[in-house]
Amino acid sequence: MIPCPNCGAENPDGAERCENCKEQLVPIVPGKTSVIIHETPKLPFIKRAPFKKG
Image 1 (tube, rainbow, N blue to C red):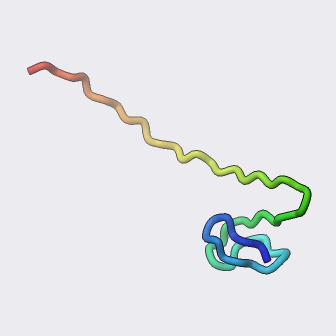
Image 2: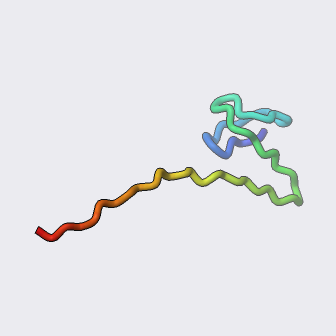
Image 3: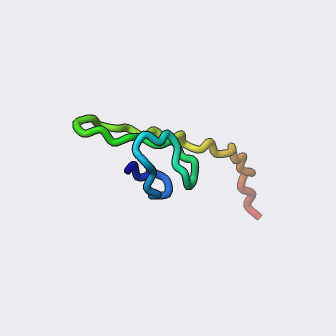
């Protein structure tokens, strides 16, 4: 069984995507290190207005 890294659901061996949330599964192979890379969300640029003393 392969646990989903996103929702934790158990999936059958050989599955490529989670049956619950459709997240890509990384099979666990003894003796190998798996790396999961998540993209950093791009935040919108916030333009600040100059501070005015009143």
